[in-house]
Length: 291
Image (cartoon, rainbow, N blue to C red):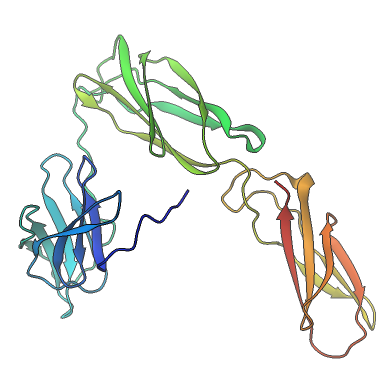
């Protein structure tokens, strides 16, 4: 669930963080800052010496801890810069030849050769909009280098910010009962051994009863000199791809320019009316679901 922490005192062009979650940002006037995730307070570290403009991004190498910034400038030039996290000073690493603008810059984690492969067959099962369900996955049976895994292997199951840990045998199918609050949840499973963590297996699913999509398949036909007929389709999924109960969906119809509600709380997917007033009308149909 989204929650505003606080209002920032600066305008950020980039926002990025270290492995341990320390947030950094570069402002639109080139200042380099640390950012407190609890209260959104910013602390000035130093000047990068550059003024950013247009699209750009920055990231931190998860292994070296170095910060790289794909920066674009008002004169339409751009390049890759290394930023000193202790002073904020930026030094050019590479000049992009054609003023390229890069967004979503990131560095892949280098999985050690003896670390486990990713888990397989990640499945998320929550029935009929329930907040209680199961997560299942198969533990890897091989290391990244292709040699067999044996014995118990550690795993972490991430439910957005919540972490559940456990152990299971190589190749074992794990079933976990979990409770998740309503909303979009990112499920991530990572297996690990003494060599390090394997690649994460990820699935994002809307949990709980979803909000409704807009009405689709809406048609309007003239049935007589004054008669009209509306029809539309029953929604098949929620706005986020989640569960909805079609038996509980009702519809509201408003006619404009009067703004008159001509039908509300009805489940049928059609409507007829006699229009006796000359002119142009607009009809809006809303779907609603009683939770």
